[in-house]
Image (cartoon, rainbow, N blue to C red; front, top):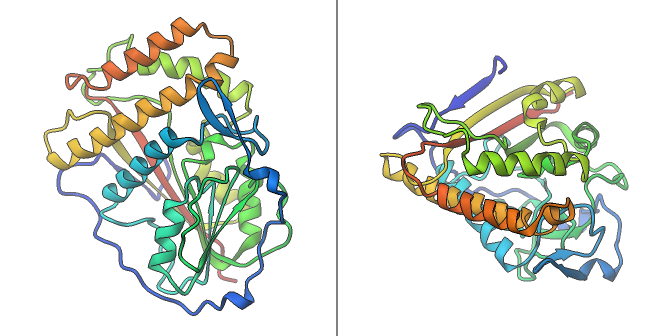
Length: 331
């Protein structure tokens, strides 16, 4: 860990204060999108293995975009807000950001709520899937595009946000370079993501813990088949510094898996997280593990075992959730 790292084990009564909504002076007539136009074909979907996926570059991202995935993502949004005491981010972006971009926006909950908090700012959400709602605040827009492509032209953003995206990118360095080039001087970037590794502080995790087995199955698939940089959080602060960012900070929360904590708030968070992890295991059990050649019976067995084990209150398991934020030099 680095000098500015904060390790937050989620002890009782030690969560951040509420956030506040403010306004700015955005004029929509002055806005130009960083990303190019895309054809109507990006609105198509494909069904495989009983789940729905985006059709635009359909092999790029193996997570479904159906109703089941929406429920999981919405619950994750609720969990992270609850974790941060109502906040949507930790970076000190000030009271009047003019332009905000949410990369890998998913179903768009974060972008919509940030747009409501800053009604004078232009908020752009970018994702491979056309799954965002049509009724949105007038200062919010959604674009279907691949954030790992070349951006059309420079555009001065005050804040760039990623949430549970970076471990599913092929080249974080290249994406972060694009962010650095497209931020205003003094602008901020924030990454929120999870390390796919299970820990406990009291050695209650057995060697054959099902989630450990699941990760041993899926990690090679994500690395070798999709090329994802699943260990990026280990080196992300150094990567950002190498690009030129300053004021690099990292805060790590130990998120309980299941309702084993004594504190009622931590039990609530753990209950959320259990459902989120079980949902992710189910999503990976569809396209990625099947296409990797695992037998369906083995996949079914590990999904069932993870679901049962995540509810065992005698196992005090947690996974680290990282918040990393950094600033482009003001001059």
